[in-house]
Length: 301
Ligand code: MN
Ligand code: MN
Image (cartoon, rainbow, N blue to C red; front, side, top):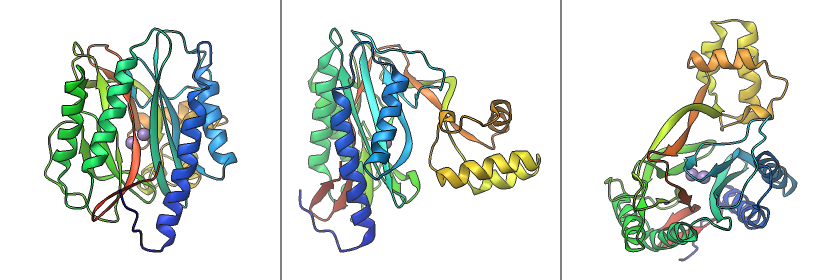
């Protein structure tokens, strides 16, 4: 995989974000242990990112067993990691709005390590195919073939994604199954993230009613204004702090929970519902963020 980036701040910021993300991911692995609090783990990740000079691009996701994505501890969480569980840690680092998104899965003793190996190998095989002009279907093909050959099943309705400045899920999706005709473009940034479940799993996720990660935009401010000054002020404050990137309520401990809930129910605050494997089977994930070049890709994370 070659590195032929034009000089420019964008790629310097992306590489800086990537370096921090890679370091925090490698450091967190040893902290995923029996008896550790999920809240403490997520908080540690977010503080470590800031300590290394990055911004937190989205709340650290801690997904246990069948919880595939979009789960982050609430401020009052008393959940502790236990033996026999599969723990996904998904973290994002932002430097000047440029985001590196990466994830790792740890199988605590008694959990199926094979799922982790399958996710990692699928990611490796997927990245071998990545270069400008490749259709996203080819990446999904590499992922699903690798996972299938190891006796597991990909999650077909979760995908990687293009990343733009302050926009985590932009434009093109990178499927985990052969689907989609879009082509990767040189100089653009994509997250590739295979999700794997067991052969007896449904191979799809469904969403719960529970929402732990939120997002607001300029449009949210305009819509909140119609409800009142306090509503507008709250949304504006969150937007200024997050710049439109996802957030958790634990980042705003003094926010009126009822007011926030009302804004969510009105659709003014957007939420990402917790996603679980539809038949309750465990899920492993591996993820890297890459820049695509003419003859390969540069793994930022
Ligand atoms: Mn991620
Ligand atoms: Mn991602």
